[in-house]
Length: 208
Image (tube, rainbow, N blue to C red):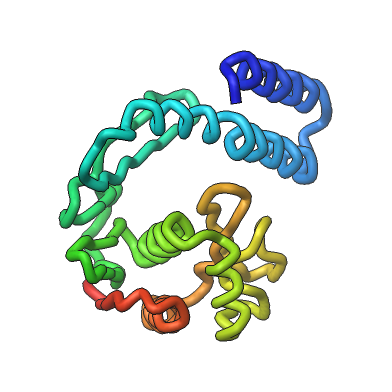
């Protein structure tokens, strides 16, 4: 992926924005635009960034994890996640009456790293995304199919949003979604089943 190819892909995405902005806004149109964005990220931006990273990190001697967040109309967040420390996204604050905190998950990896986000759904997504990054989506989907890890009658992880009306599909990138429509205890059980299927040897705790 060259810079010129990336620029061309970006111009095609902008053309898609222009096309959709001048047509009636429909759910189908929004989904098509979202697919165009994901295609640009997956097939152009990420390969280009990977080339840059490979060029300037080939002499590093220790593994690192980097979080790269892009929010519309906001600054880009790029930071290194320290090994062995919790990757904890700050919980949004609300000026309301105190209420009982929802339960969360904490996942301890054999290397000593911790996966924990600000709620159980985000922690589940972060854990599955982590596994996909180190093992590949094909191996993860094969394990999910072999061990029948489903929710609402569909695979726990699938390409594109889940179809059941009660599903709570959350994007984990590259066009894949996790259905988080379950309580914290069930999330723990699903992740433990996935861990056993892939030999991850992680330990999962429910915390309040």
